[in-house]
Length: 157
Image 1 (cartoon, rainbow, N blue to C red):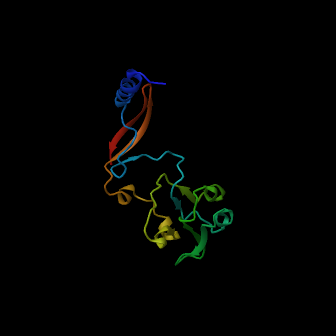
Image 2: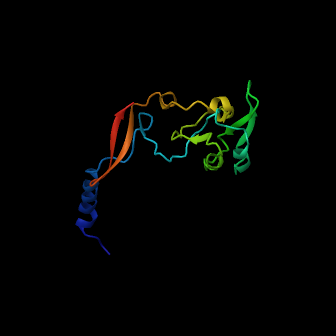
Image 3: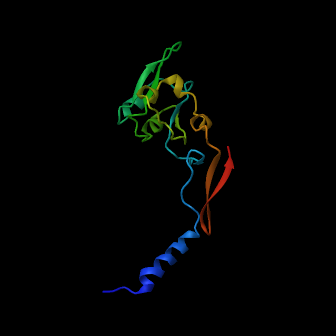
């Protein structure tokens, strides 16, 4: 069956023109980053003064990513997390009886060295600064729903 000139040539051009009016759906990642949502499961931060060293987080971890480690000058052991094993399920945060663990909306954890992805208690107490992780970051994008669809508000970092 032969297709007509309109369906072979004109129809694809009309489709392209219709989609050319839309704004792009991609973001320039190292320069623009979507703001983390409040319940984003990202890097885990330890509040050492709240932790009682019970080890419940280590027992419940399905990936065996949490080990209890001693800290110099303290008598308790505190959780250390191997983020290479961690699946960010959040069970450790939920089970903590003192709410000593919390998840940040920062998901950038890449490294070329294995040892850099094991966070010991001293390092876990420091919340990550997004500007240190992404030095070329210029804008944070906040999604806003409108009647025309999803739009992004750009604010300078």
